[in-house]
Image 1 (cartoon, rainbow, N blue to C red):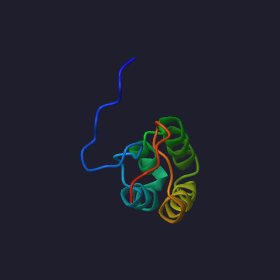
Image 2: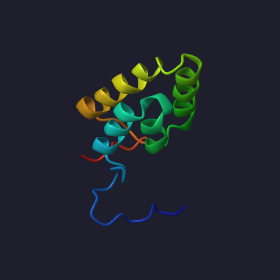
Image 3: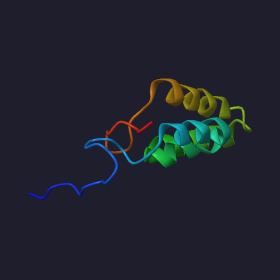
Length: 85
């Protein structure tokens, strides 16, 4: 059994991804699922992309709301670790 690599500068168990970056990407590029791709949630990112394309961009509202919720409540990355501030 191997131990996870040490991440200097970050507490153990906290993601190296920023919730501010994920939130801004979600608000600005939500129609493309950029915030979810950044966080490592590729399935949700692809779903946001497909909904955004199929609705002619109106589905980008989902990404915008998702980005705001990430900024307010935080979130977790693809490995389930909380995003850093």
